[in-house]
Image 1 (cartoon, rainbow, N blue to C red):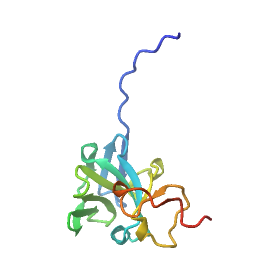
Image 2: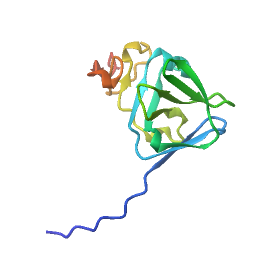
Image 3: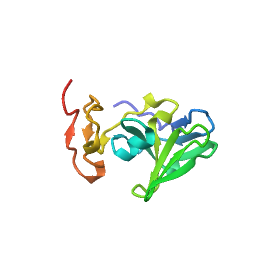
Image 4: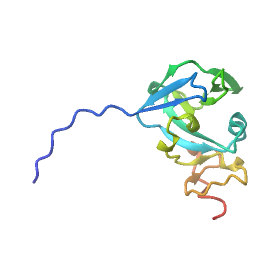
Length: 157
């Protein structure tokens, strides 16, 4: 039987950075995200002026601002959306339903290609022309509210 190697020193936690368009606000989080998902709800679509928003959920204990402070807007009861006061870039979402978490917009990451979304939430509100052709689970509302309504797009390409 081969000898096992002694345990190596703990690896330094991975740091992921992000910023707004004008670089007034910069942030970082350490470790892996708690979750990543595409949100199709009307509120997120309006907040980002896009067909859906892709979020990276991290613990508040993993997260800190490196430069600047965003402005917050209470978009609905228990929900605050944060953006750069100079360029207007949306950066984050904090909601009472997710205590201890901050949800970062994947597009604000320095390397958004480094994350992999794991599902779609609020698929019941999805725009018919914004049906991504991936095999990720689709939840009618939130993933923690039940089983997926389907996997993959409504219609195959």
